[in-house]
Length: 74
Length: 264
Ligand SMILES: Cc1ncc(C[n+]2csc(CCOP(=O)(O)OP(=O)(O)O)c2C)c(N)n1
Ligand code: SF4
Ligand code: SF4
Ligand code: SF4
Image (cartoon, rainbow over all chains, first blue to last red; front, side, top):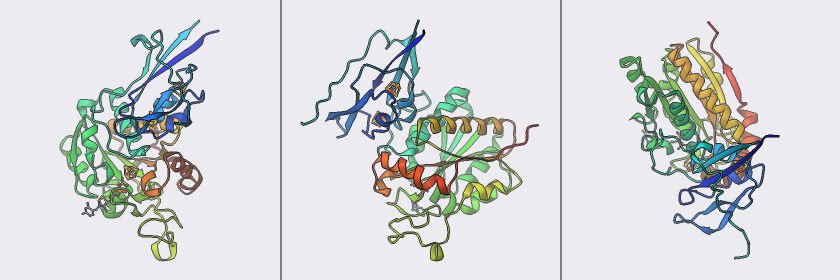
C-alpha cells in the first residue's frame, strides 16, 4: 500500500507561538519549544517523527512559516 | 524548566525539493507580518496572495489597503497597492478599475472601515455593480484602535465602548453585511467564510479564486466576508478566539454562499 511520509521545516525566528498548528495537526507531531526565539515567543517544533505531510499546519499557520514536504512511498 | 520536549531533526530523505508540498508564496514579501499571534488578518493575506500566485496574476492585480490593523497590507502583499482614506477603499477601487478595466482590482477592509465609516462607499459601489472584489474581515471589533464596538459586534459582546455588553436596544443589532449587500441586483457574488480551521482556510481560498474569476468574466461586485478573530482585543488566546468563532460568531454569521451568479 502506498504510504505518505511527511516532514515540516519551521522558520522558528518568525513563529509567534500561536499554537494553531499544534491544535490542527492530527498526528500530534508538533509542540511549543521550552525555549523562546528572538521575538520572545515559544516557537513550534517537531516532537514526534510521524508527520504524514497532510499540510494542515501550513494551511492554518497565519504567518506562513511552515514549509511542508511529502513523499509517497510504495 | 519543567517540561521535557525533545526536538526531532528534519529527515533529509523527505526534505528534498521534489517533495515540496507547501511553502510561503513569492507574492508575499519576506517582511514578517506585524499582526498579533494567531490573527486572521495574517491568514487571509497569505491565502489571498497564494491565489494570486496560483492564478499567475501578480502583475495584473491592484489592491486597495484600508485603515485598521491591515493598514500596512501593502508591505506584505507583493502586488501593486494603493492606500485609501478610512472607509474609502471601494471608492478608490472604483476609480482604479474604471481607468484600468483589464486589471484585477480588490479592496481589503475591516468591519469598522467597511461597515461604519465606509458604509456609503461600500453600499454604493455594490449598488453600481463595480467589477471589483471586496475582501471583508469581520472580527467584530475595531482592532487597531484597541477594541471599540464595531457595527458587527455581537449582541451582549463586551468591547471597550460597550463595557456591559452590546445592548441592542440602544446600540442596534450587528449588521449582516453579506445579507444586506446580496439584496442589491448588481451584486454578483456574496459569500461568508472563515479561516479558523484548515478546512475553512481551503474553502475561503476557493471563494477568493472564484470571485477573481467572476471579475475576469465581468460579472460585477463580489464580496468575500471572512469571519475572523481579534485575540488581543477579545482578550483570548488564539485557540480560545477560534473556539469563540465556532460558538458565538458563526451562529450569528452563518458560513456559506449568500448569492451566486447565474451560470451563463
Ligand atoms: C477618518 C478616521 N477616523 C477614525 C480613525 C481611527 N481608526 C483607525 S482604525 C479604526 C477602525 C479599525 O477597525 P476595523 O476596520 O474593524 O479594522 P481592524 O483594525 O479590526 O482590522 C478607526 C476608527 C482614522 N484613522 N481615520
Ligand atoms: S503536515 Fe500534517 S502531520 Fe505533518 S506536522 Fe503538519 S499537520 Fe502534522
Ligand atoms: S501556526 Fe505558525 S506561528 Fe503559530 S505556532 Fe505554529 S508555526 Fe508558529
Ligand atoms: S489587534 Fe486584533 S485584528 Fe489587530 S492584529 Fe491584533 S489580533 Fe489582529
